[in-house]
Length: 442
Image 1 (cartoon, rainbow, N blue to C red):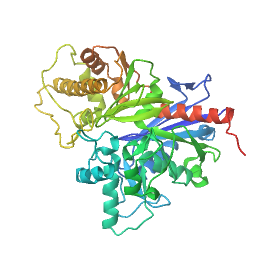
Image 2 (image 1 turned 180 degrees about the vertical axis):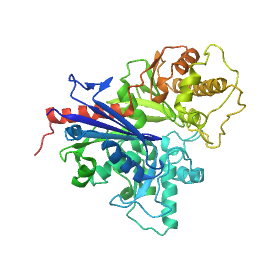
Image 3 (image 1 turned 30 degrees about the horizontal axis):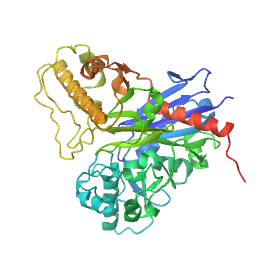
Image 4 (image 1 turned 60 degrees about the vertical axis):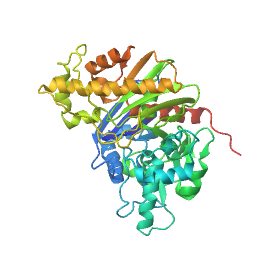
């Protein structure tokens, strides 16, 4: 039987998976994968057991004949959701049984971060780990909680995708480079920032592997839980936003807008960019710069369900602005295009008309996106020729019209190009590269 390839996306609100066949065969095209599934977490985002159990339950909906043909799996996760665990990956007792989510700012760690990293003279720190909204701040809070709980050495700090990857292999040594940038991994130097390595302890940090690296086979126990073959290889994945970029397959001049629970903007650049709230990643051998807002489509669900959003969207008139100036953050604090943990949402006034209110919220999200692209341009990103939209919000044609009008360039919606699909493509490419060009062995 021909090989299949599995991509898993651990998003803000749930899981999604995609199965791809070999390129050129039925079920092997990005816009027509063999199979897709999604479900909410069986718990909260902060609960690691919800990630693991959610994957087990979602894969159980996939026919056994398909599962047994999967030869490689890659996982992405929310960049910045971090937990402390035991050396064998075990979850800890309260107050460390939960992860700290990607959107949590730890402003009390600002002084400690500056002491670890230093600060350029006359300007703000430029590495993404320097922000109070980054993983380093959450790591310092986790270690402080561990000290207060009397826990000694032997703890590991692992991001969402890396922890679940560890469970797949029963080996928690590894971490994928993109998931660890905001913890202090220096992509250009290929090492941890000196202050991070000394301040957190090298033993707490993962051994970093590049996205697409084949790490080894599934552990027998995990394979049995998932109904996958023990021959299935685990591939180092990426962040959820980078996975969406892989799925979108952007060309020169394209920007990628991930319209999920949060809004993420990405652009390929010639060299890394420096700026507060900005992250640089290496994807498919190229530099990818961008940032993630705490605003996004998730705030819409506070007021309307998906069916109501679709109904109200049909009543929107994109060429007739509401004039309302809303700032639809999901909670206090913003990461990009401004890095301000104290920034408050503006969700009022609320018009009597629900359609008008939805339009005002979408206009607010559009304004954040426009400012984000302007910020990237100011920092040295190339001028945009068009924007490719992926994620759940890419299904909304009225929002696309608002965005195209505000940006003054074409905006394309590709809702089928999911982050899970990006991981399935990565798993397939990495597996094929290993088969066709195996490394030399002594």
